[in-house]
Amino acid sequence: LCENTPVHLIENELENTTSGEDDCRPATPLYIYSQAQLQRNIQGYKNAIQSAKMLDRIHIFYAVKANANLHLMDLVRKQNCGAVTVSGYELQAALKTGFVPEMILLNGNGKQIWEIRLALKNGCMLNVDSLFDAENIISVARELQKPARVLIRVNPGLEQSSTPVHSYLSTALKNSKFGVPLHQFDQVLELLKAEHLIQLVGLHCHVGSTIRDATVYATVTRTLLDIRQKLITQGCTNLKYLDIGGGLGIDYYHGTNQGQSPLSTTGDLIQAIASLLPPDVEVIIEPGRSIVGNTGILVTKILGIKKSPDGGKQFVVVDAAMNDLIRPSFYQAYHHVLPVRKTDSSEDVYDIVGPVCESGDFLAVDRRLTQQPVKGELLAIMDVGAYGIAMASNYNMRGRAMEVMVDGNKWKIIRRRENFDSLVRTMID
Ligand code: LLP
Image (cartoon, rainbow, N blue to C red; front, side, top):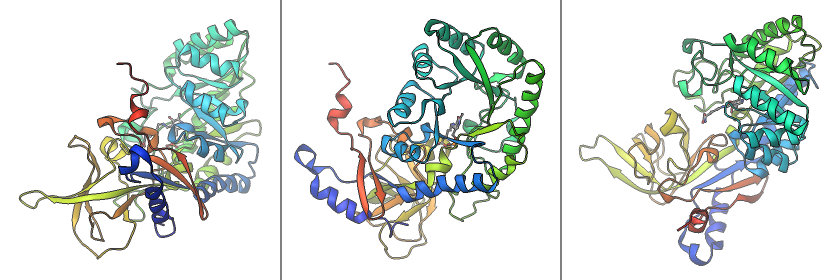
């Protein structure tokens, strides 16, 4: 992949074009995305939906949190996807990039009044996450005298053992903060039914992220269908949508198995649910990672190599850090690392660490590199299109990285590198 991406061209050109005060700043760290891969990922979902004869019955709502770059969102929107958002600004970003308001969903366990207002004013859908959320949505609908199309987010109260993903990435456990727990469901329902401005159009459930087994989605669909059936007997007749969330994993391991269970494809996911759907039900899926994850690489320069005194550790110190990509530090997540240019072969094991002043600042730990790391050379951290730049911070007063979109042999900067001014602009001295 690295040989096919014009990393060197981009690097050279950027180094030649930096100007003024920033002259001394290097071109890295740098996020590079592939437009072709993004389109292939969405097309993969669409082909599966078409083969299952579910066109217009299964809708893709892109999970904006995975990557909210406006240029990238625009490419997703052009593929006729909807958007699921979790904050007022994500919602604004979806509106700004032209997503159809009726195909934007505002989700979240702590929506604020201004965010609910924004959604209702623009005719977007909302998830009801709790009793207080239902009360807030009702009061804003009354204030604006606007109808509110809502789904109830159900927390089915699973056990951790039944969702084999990192506990931070599980969202439907008994003790999760998300969704209406089953014991409060009727209370929330009664409240919503009593308000004529509320249109209950569906049910939602997102069980977690990095799910490798598509049969989980069949279980979710069955659970939601059961609840729907009960609601129909209670007089809810407009339950058109079942939103089964996002969360399908991607191949972070590049075939280096690492003891992982087999990974289902997007096709497996669609197949798992298609046969379960009664004719009057439409499904929303909310993929983030499986749309953008493998479209992005983080290119970083090797600043030097360092050994611990007893030779127990060898560190490759690079110019990207946990502020650029927090997934390894935060979830012990694995990201494949490849050299951009070929160097001599190696068998050695290294920690790849950044310049941030934290021992937990690493991009890879105890990683066997098959090519020698050389000072000044570039490494590509793979599969960072989702939750890479989206979770980046300014910790240690580091500017966030630049982002570039590659389209065939053309490329375009889609976010400028942050500089000192960007960091201090909002501060008041
Ligand atoms: N829908 C809901 C309600 C969600 O909470 C999420 C992710 C998604 C959809 C999209 O899930 P995806 O298809 O991208 O897995 N920062 C973590 C991931 C947290 C995901 C939270 N919710 C990471 O870096 O892996």
